[in-house]
Image 1 (cartoon, rainbow, N blue to C red):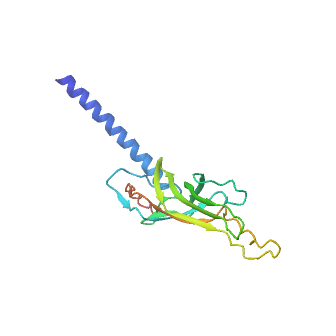
Image 2 (tube, rainbow, N blue to C red; image 1 turned 180 degrees about the horizontal axis):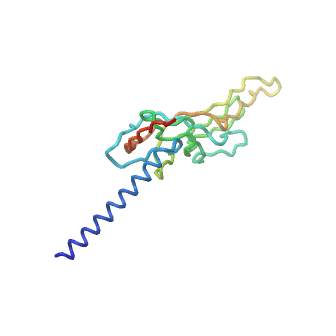
Image 3 (cartoon, rainbow, N blue to C red; image 1 turned 90 degrees about the horizontal axis):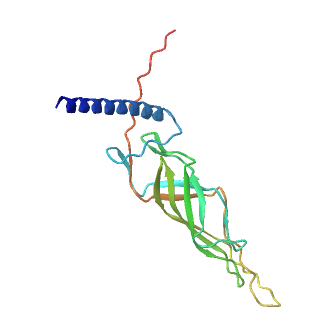
Length: 190
């Protein structure tokens, strides 16, 4: 029985050591202004599904060369940090993924190009977070008449440029761990 108590006591000491070491790393993370707050499974503040996220495209989407197809996945990033109680939860530059859902190339009779895309997800704190929201662009329709042939001129291509800002929304609730209280400021000595 005493051997069992000794083993239990050693296990408790190891667990205590692990918890004390993890609190040091949490404090170091909280001091970094550009790191996201730890996303936790429970017992924290919740950022609700439907919260707006501002994204920036990292590549151009265009119907100009007729190579863009539905299903194409492209790179985006968070353009404005998501904050909770003046603390950055999701920093600017967090990578995100989008997908082209519809493409229509320009054509004769003034048919303009069209692109529709949607936000899929972003990755932060070692976790993938689902996003929703769609955006699109339509080229201008051609309206000039060519007298000899009688056809309308083709419309213009649709283009969503690299660096374009689009809006997306969280498609799931995010629970955020409560950050440790900041250490009290030490009075300066002169």
